Image 1 (cartoon, one colour):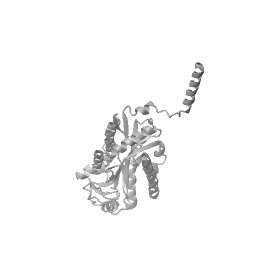
Image 2 (cartoon, rainbow, N blue to C red; image 1 turned 180 degrees about the vertical axis):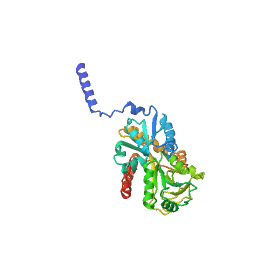
Image 3 (cartoon, rainbow, N blue to C red; image 1 turned 180 degrees about the horizontal axis):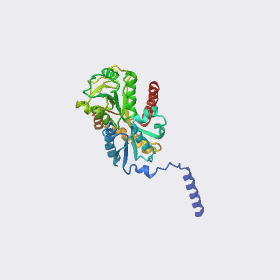
Image 4 (cartoon, rainbow, N blue to C red; image 1 turned 135 degrees about the horizontal axis):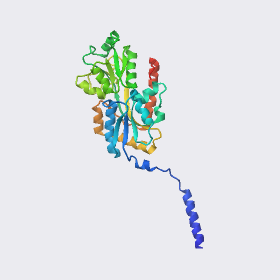
Length: 328
């Protein structure tokens, strides 16, 4: 009887085990994430807007995640070198991209044979920041307004040029050319900081640049802002008109920066990063640091970020078709 009883107990145990659902196994790597240094890859040289954003975020993530977070600059092709680099890295959450709208939305819209597609090859973790652009000129230039610059450029086409370091700046300026008729040609730089120095040094006539590298030089009198590409004036530069106020209402451009992970990054890791970045972007001290660069924090969800990328890619395809632009 005892033997039979044991057989019945074993059979019941096996039947019970069969009814218990098998849960997906969470790997030890995911459980431990992060357990080593995380790299934030930036596609522009030190001193530019995206680099400055990355370094603030790296400090905050280091505290939040309990592991070192370092910024690496991989410069080239308007930020696309960094995108291709991160695309080829293991999808484990240890190599992340600070991606700018130029490389992640605009280039996807306009560059033929691009070796990546943002929403196919990456997980958009969270939009970190958004900002307008500034049209800036050397303070010694004879043009004091945007219309005066257009008049000067048409009278001096051989001297008229602009600095750019990414597809975003190029398209914003080409949109201005389309609407104004100013015959300005592009001069490539590696970062917004270099674009600003180019105008200050007289190598380029104007630049349409992000606020972080430009604001200090404008406040120091080494650069003059002609207009803002936003719908309203910037609180940091209340005397600088919008493009609409300057006579060019169709030149309305806003850019953003965000965090991306390679496609295939485990969902728990991507969600952890999304949650931490959202929390960081709501911190008053972080918001204050970004406002000092004339930049607004965002901290979006991954789905919200993906929707923005899809919408802007379609919009810029329309601009390029209208201007008949060919970019490489």
